[in-house]
Image (cartoon, rainbow, N blue to C red; front, side, top):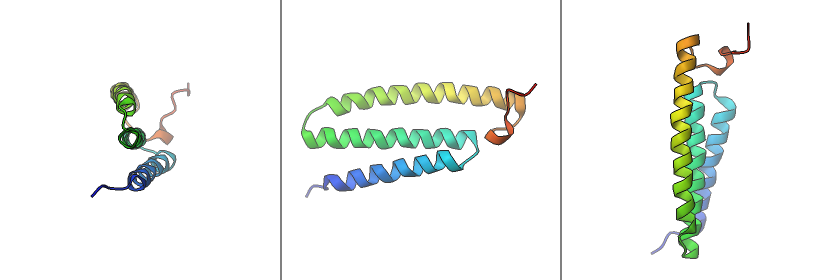
Length: 101
């Protein structure tokens, strides 16, 4: 018994929507980065689903590139958050204003 492709696509769409809502609503920088990672993982799920459905490995190859970009984004993003926290003592996006004199 095989799971239909629609189930995977609905799950991927739900994860993506949760990530978008999290980015738009939350003000904590760490949670925003987690929501961006959730959106990237939902795109990975879609790529794997279509790769499996079509029977080729190109989608799986793209997933490796997306995972590499996500790892670099996480490393650079967390380094920026740590630097901002050391200077401003907060990770709340509303309270961080680096353009103020």
